[in-house]
Image 1 (cartoon, rainbow, N blue to C red):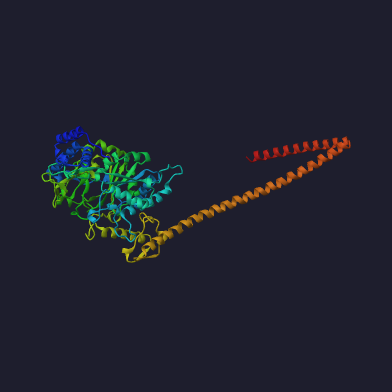
Image 2: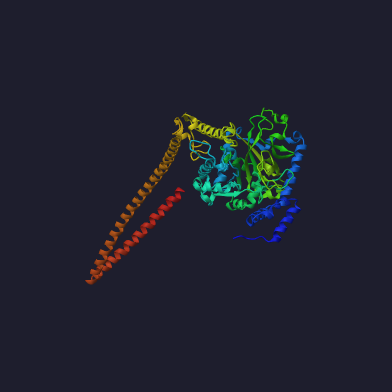
Length: 597
């Protein structure tokens, strides 16, 4: 059924856009069909055009200020009180952090927020990037690898659960932020794969926001005559999305106090990393970030540092060569904390974001944007940058943290991004696959085992181990063959060995329980024997009494009253004798006890 739009409503919307200087979006409105008019009207109604103008002006002003400011004078390295390193920390310290993190997970206080709005366009795929197969021997996608890590971690945290834990204890809810182009495809992918073993109710999908694409002078662009050109508002759009999509409310209802937030394209991401969680919780952190040491001063990555007296990220292009090459006394780069988009947030911090959201600057990204020529009405597919997208970055909230913490990790264990297409040689499917397999081989070797054959064909399932734990008792002193057909067999072997170990542990417990049960059974049998003896004794007494009763009846019936009186007198006398004797024995016992005391 077609719903007509009142002319007054159309005019009111036109006036609003004219006042905002964006009246060009109605250039072709009168030429559209009723359905096309309705679609464009609805889209323009949903856009906060005044806010779009504010964001544009703020972005332009911020960009101009950044270009005019001497970055060398305004940036400082991180201080030691906010910086720690997994690499340099002692084994005891790491274990303490991990224990704290596992306890938080066991108590149901930890969630995961995944930024997964991107498509695999650079990878030659139109599907969501998380659906990409990097050609591991198992064929697992990024989504599946991360889902299985959550399952394994929930199992590891189970040992810390308390008997009185609530229903959400030990569960890590997974909030997956999608975008308009990827939302339906992402949900369908999870649905068709049965959520990779996770409970559907614990996998929550929500869409990030979008903003209109703008010309270089800030005018809203039309993709075609009846549709505004829109783009996701950057990974920093997560903050507005969790407010408007009900995520904050869900976190509070579940009792979640801390969230681990990361990007889908890091194949080595330690989802809900208990070491990171424990580290941040131990320091009372409200906003934390993982970093990796820069490989070289010229590596084109953003750096976490102090900027204008506040924590933030400075892009590689924003600092001079001299600043990027500065070193500390130990020889490490002073500005070497490379940002890897891996964050910790307290729920209280996420709730506080709206109070300063108007101060968050959006960044201008010049892009080749398909659009309609307002003069000819023809669609243009540009070969050069034709407009801009406004993006907010996830690290833009750093300056507003009250307790900021930075944890350095080992790059080879936790960071291998997938940014480029096959054959690129860097941050591509081949390097992602290489880094995962190399990590799995290290897990085996650290546990005392050895991988033989082609290591490129070796893989461990996250179901088997999260970070190398639980392998020593299975592979120590053993050689595991890696070949094109053995990967699944090796995983099955490790699974089987794990099951054997667990069955042995269960068997020991059952054996101990059996012994206890046998002892209890023997005790009961002994008690049954005592009861049986007592029953027989009382039975004999009953027979004697019945016989005495019979004799008494006979005596009465034969009028032997004298005999009856005699027996009664004897019985009474015996009663008093026994009564006196028992009292004397009891008194003697009490005296002995008293003397002993």
